[in-house]
Image (cartoon, rainbow, N blue to C red; front, side, top):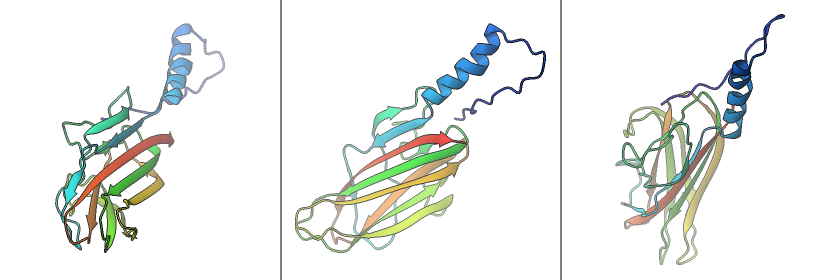
Length: 184
């Protein structure tokens, strides 16, 4: 699952400019820049998360793609649907939105944990972020976690998300995740 970023040719005096080179050096580069790697996925049906003070279980799974890069998939809804892959080396804008369902009497906190290359295991890979957020204390209001960051990733890396809450009862979570290549 890797796609190399096109590298421009270094021209030397006397190099002939041909149609084939124009396609390779100009068309392919512009095609890449006009449609860089990006994807946006979400969990449309929601996931029931048990209340607890520690991260447990499986990462969130994303069952719906708003879009996925046409050249090479960054996400698959059937194989490892919890993963968002990075097909090329570079800087990516990574955006997360987690919505915890309405609660008649909201209590506790909500938290997000992001890991790279963890293979669905909280003890594997690299921790990117662990952050707790206060609950929205308005009755029957959604508590949302929104996080955006620019990060450098290597071709073949992927990210997964875990959430937790201390509401006291199960809470249904819907999530959205997107990433866009920004450059090298």
